[in-house]
Image (spheres, rainbow, N blue to C red):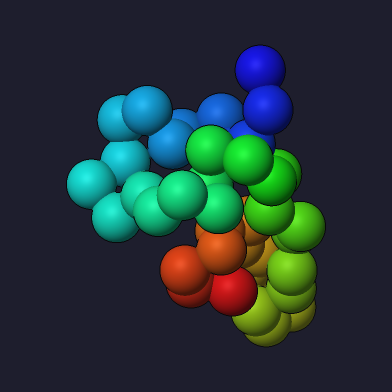
Length: 39
């Protein structure tokens, strides 16, 4: 399937979530996020 693996069960999901996999981004030394909304 395309998009974020959580888009079908995420309450914050948007159209882009179902089409594109978000990139993993470093928030700080030990915290990463892969989300279109929060990265």
